[in-house]
Length: 378
Image (cartoon, rainbow, N blue to C red; front, side, top):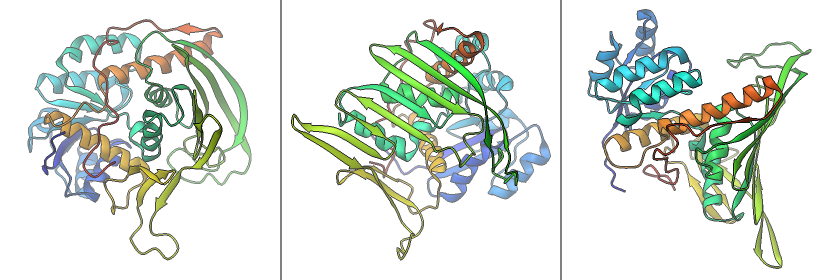
């Protein structure tokens, strides 16, 4: 794959919570990223963000798409507004990296696809499979360490995010899927609120837990387990299991059949610098198993969280794709499919019966290539 040293240049439309992920990585890595402009309907908000992150506040969507000649525009606005803004930018001939999900409901998703799908200018900022631990797990799966993957169990992310992890690790495609889901009312101490502040409340509060089974066909299934506010609650560990015909990955442990009489158990090792007497700096270096690196952080020694690394990776992959230097990072068709199945989980739980999704117009579009890497990543 051809690569250049050219900066990944992007503009941002929308100044919500997710916008700051992209602004933060650009500020931390000015040798790789440049923000050409920030636009929001709130002049005060766009000026505040531009000042805080050292970029330019622009006065319109059109100006965001043109000022500084960005490779693409990130659209990070509320769901109902996203389709119109995406189409507006596409009609200017500029590529879009749209925050998830791309539209609120199935009719609007179908309408969005009919309007911009054929233009092949829209990718989705579904960054979960670009997180370091998932990148390492995906490489283990692709190298056949646990045989043919048959089941993925996710208890960490909600709805379309969890679905994206399942589909990627199972290579499940976009065909009809049977979903069986149920919700239960429970209670849980919730020490940290959405946004990361402590509640100082030691009493359990009502929460809804959702369980779902997704049958993708061809012997591939997903198990979804999510409790409200699980993203922020440190009392609920995140869990991910990938089961295959010859072993399984359970969080940071792997068991597999090395030969007909040898079962091997391994620990996935994360090399994090800056701990104890290590003076290299504080950053993720690599993730390995069986003495082999499965993932190397391409942005070391920058002090980035795993979420920030994922945001940086999908932005750089997006810029490479726009310039013809790599495959698409996460096509619109996949973002639509993830949300379709997320909606099916909610519908099945609400109706108390299985829901079977149809083959949608985007089913046969080209898919992502998760094995493609940005410079410095392995």
